[in-house]
Image (cartoon, rainbow, N blue to C red; front, top):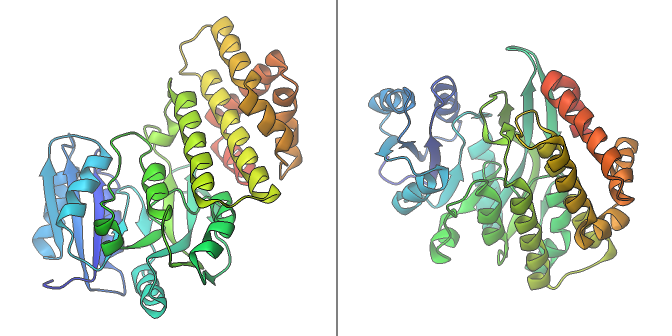
Length: 352
């Protein structure tokens, strides 16, 4: 394709069972004017070979083979090579609905947008064929101004629509002009998107859902035990606070959202400690939990947050009152459900 309008970028590592479906979902798009960078990040399985096989039959697919450096470096290599007017980022173990690019490009073109945000599906498989489907979206909206977007962004954050790259179409010139790249860190999506929305002016949202985020692989990044998870979440909380200070927008609704977002992630950090793969002793786990729930930030958030469900009110009760033992026992139950009944855990999480 001599003049592709959309540059699709996909890092590839250890996904030989899934990458074919990801590629085919792009080939099946009703919009055909694209180039597709499949970046083999030094994978040890057949993923890179599979990409080569598709590229041999479709000259819109460009395979880049590189030494392993992580998904951020893989995406960044392709950003520098992309020539499209728009950029779209795909994960290699997920797939997309056929009209995604056509609809998002049209929305961007009709409204001169720098960023298009869509809804998506979370498909959590609890057997090889059965899944729990969670839908994430908000109503259609074209923001009339930068200020209007900033004042409303918390609703999009609240529905997990601004954290990930794969439910978005980006104006490529905006990325290039601002020299925006993925930082070399795990969970790189969030800081990248914060850098995008920081000074964005023209944003549109569609309620349509196109992307299927697959929760299935036990080895996926979201399923791992992370000894540094709490430090990472604290860093992310600081980024969010800095963003809203920079935007100079504030309200009781925004403060409640920030508090609830933070304390829900504290729950995740505590569950990470009671995760079966955590090697700390019971005493060490209790000490870590006590430190986490006793911080001024956690206590303030627990007081301001207004949970959306009775379940979350129950979960937050011992945190709010700094009951370490009860918080620990409660988290052990959450870890047990998470490891033994994927369907129940996904359902409870979706309705939290």
